[in-house]
Amino acid sequence: MMNFNKGVIYILIGASFFGFTPIFAKIGFSHGYSLGQINIVQMVVSFFLLWSFTLLKRSSFKGLHKKNVLQIMMTGCFIGLTSIFYYGSMQYLPASLAIILMFQFVWIGIILEWIFSKIKPAPVTVLSILLILIGVFFASNFVNGDIQGLPIKGFIFGILSAFTYAGFIFCSGKVAVNVDPWTRSSLMVTGSTILVLVVFIGDMPTVLPLEKDLFATAVGVSLFGAVLPPLFFAAGAPLVSGGVANILTSIELPIAILSASLILSEVVSPYQWFGIAIILAAIALNELSPNLFRIRKHLN
Image 1 (spheres, one colour):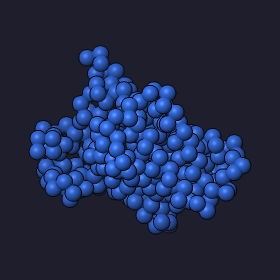
Image 2 (cartoon, one colour):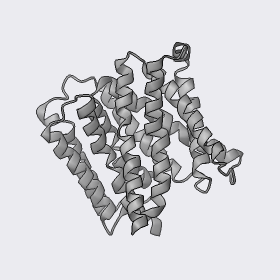
Image 3 (cartoon, rainbow, N blue to C red):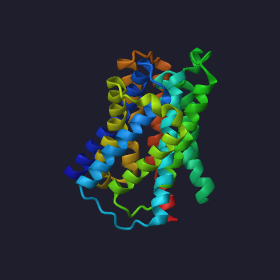
């Protein structure tokens, strides 16, 4: 029981860290830095931090070969794309709305499993998807008409971030799963760093000389998004079941919304909190159901 409680605490802490990443991105934009500048420095910092941890821990490179190294790096490209689209969405939308759009990865991931793994979702999963979509309707503040006038580009980026994040989760669960997690994470961030440098090659000269505010923003996003959460997840996930872990990680959503409200002074209406509650309830329903989609997958 003590190990279970410890696992719960570790996962809650890790997921809570994720919830603070939008704050640093928004602060970076407020300083006038571009999407490219923030992504470049974030990925380079993450690259050095993760590889430093991996080498200092003397993590194993067992099981690596030319083919799966490339597969791991390509999977990591989804992280880079998610970062680009997620922060891109925040350039045009309130952080709270960008977060809600990105969180649609939950049901998109289920659809990807259905299409590519031929695993039909259980009825309770379909109900969960419908509840999530209802929750999004309220959480986006559509009821109050507050989304009118917001750039459509922000919504497109937000939904794209959900698709790329769902793609990352889908692929990461199938590629080189027996390789040491730290080595795997470092190779993934290598792939995402290369992608970001290629996409924003025109912004690279503007990064140097590296300004203090840009570096602080990038370190914040890297630590809270790419380094600390995996560290706590790696410690906590083995101590709890997969369903409990998935429910616990959903705390990222209210933490991110609450931090946007308190730190960025974004107004979150009662309708939005109601929508967020529906989304979290839908996730819990899917994870706790005896007809759980992932359990069915495991049995197949």
